[in-house]
Picture 1 (cartoon, rainbow, N blue to C red):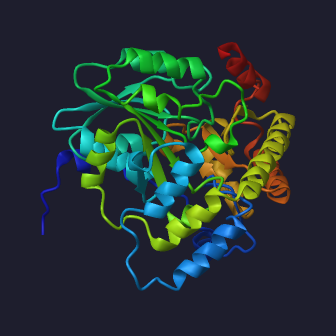
Picture 2 (picture 1 turned 60 degrees about the vertical axis):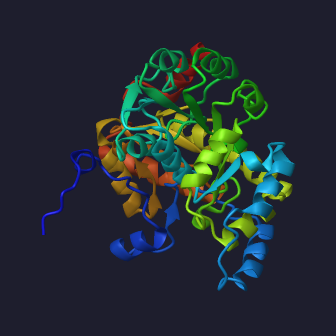
Length: 387
């Protein structure tokens, strides 16, 4: 049988998720593997979320609340956004796809930064849309001004990852303000804030108050990262207008989030102790990991998220495979557009120590740091010049 697959779909490269620990151990005959490849919370889920999920399982034979009433009202109480302007998704990635499918139209385009989360481009190009990719600014950052200038008559959407995955860099408050002032209101500005709970820098944008002033603004958030619920797949969109929310609800599948995920999310949302412990642990361990990388003379991009983009040169994939052979899973970044880099998730102290040890051993086997003569400090200086 020969299927008539649209050419635009045949040309797409599917997203390549990180492999589960169990699959890696089965394939390679490993045990006690450390996974630092998928930007997961190493502390796991909130204990309150686990208990809520267990209770919800007792009603697993019933369909979930299709509107997510209680979760939307819990988010409203926490964030100050009306429930009618909160749309739930099967992870924030589903919302990226939903927005693209709903608002691109037959000849629309989306403005996206090079080096941004790859699902933006896939979500836009899978239907009938065009992706206009804008080169990054120095320091592996979104060039927000250039992206605003790239908006044309066919532009329907703009995607910003803040912080960006996989670089860990961020858009500053004044840059976000410039974009929202410059872009016409008929262009939707989507800001993916999946990692916002980890950010501690003072000039990171606080965008929720902007929703009232900018009806074309959409903020995407998730329970997969600091809340530790990646396996339950639940996220949400905060939107600037009733019209956007109502339109998305017309297209959204009625049971796209499970009752177990909704219950766990409500509990996780209000577990401030777990959120604080997760973010503070990440900050401490990020410093430890970056210090270890710098001591080896390895270049990396200074990050405000829970991962580090490590620049290893042309042997990056070879080094990641060597680390895998030692039971440490990191993510090679060729698929993300960085063939000479790997992304390392910040883990616990013992996981980070093991990662640094495996990297040092792999570098010795490969003949030294990939970017000889260019240390981590030089990458940090690039970021400082952007400040």
